[in-house]
Image 1 (cartoon, helix red, strand yellow):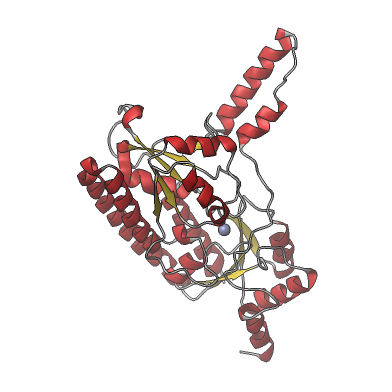
Image 2 (cartoon, rainbow, N blue to C red):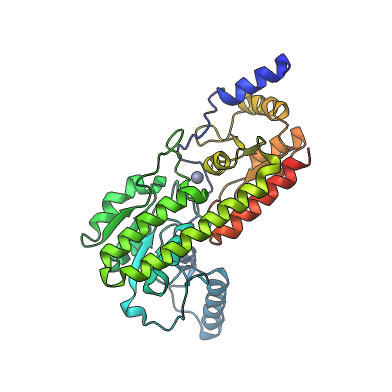
Amino acid sequence: MSEQAEVARIHVRRPVGLRSGSHARVQERRQRPVRTRFLAIAPATAAPVGVVVPFIVAIVTLLSILGPSGPDGIATMSRCEAASGSSSGASTDRLRVVVSILPQAYFVERIGGDRVAVSVMVPPGASPHTYEPAASQMRDLARAQMYVRIRVHFEEAWMPRIAAANRGMLVVDSTSGIELSGDEDPHVWLSPRLVRIQAEQIYRGLAKVDPAHRDVYERNKEAFLRDLDALDAELAQTLAPVRGGRFMVLHPAWGYFARDYGLEELPIEVEGKEPSAKELAALVEAARANHVKVIFVQPQMSPRAAEVLARQIGARVATVDPLARDWAANLRAVARTLVEAIGGR
Ligand SMILES: [Zn+2]
């Protein structure tokens, strides 16, 4: 390795304030729940019917397109296709489970099946690092039997209030038994191996809240674990040709995923903020030395810094969503993107 390359490697590893796995609160485009935004523009004063009716129709249409934010302010999830059985079960006797982020809805539905109705606190497009639950979401917690936390940043500030909103609600920490890496990297849902552990915690919680159906939950959990193992093996096989490869990310969400499959993630964010001009210059140098071909950006954040960097090093920018609802398909797509980008070396 040339001396210049060595210097650049050092910049990546012990930079210029560039801490790998830094999860300070992220400066992001703050996004409010869709419902709030539309309520704010609804006409409060009397207006001619000819104006109001088309206006309401337009809002209803927009809301149905934008879905899935339910009328209660919590993004109400439809049951996932993977869960077994029909949807005929009476919703009144379903367990109400609240989770922090979208991928958890998939995990809980895989184990709870027909027995659960899952609501998600952080709506699509918002960031779990900075989200502030709506008042209506806090009120709705009163009807929940269980909350599955995953230690994303908004929980730090809100968990005491969430627990206080319903003392009878079981709070399950799905990260129990997971050793967080680096700077307490919270993105544990992006590693099928770590999701195995979360599945066990979710199962235990459901069995505790609803012991009469423990057998159902156990069967569903076992099936989910088999699928997780199969997905893990598939991802390892897909990514085998690019083992040892490095990729850059705007926000360091993919550290556990990279670790599982022998890759290295180089973050652009510096303690949750966009890099300064000086830091960007160091990143350009590091990216060149590491032959970075792809930079991941995510829909919840401005891709500006990544685009500037990509232009300078001739890399491509790929949008990947750490919070995708279709969890397994998303991980497969990310693996393919990495193989295409890194393998093209
Ligand atoms: Zn994150």
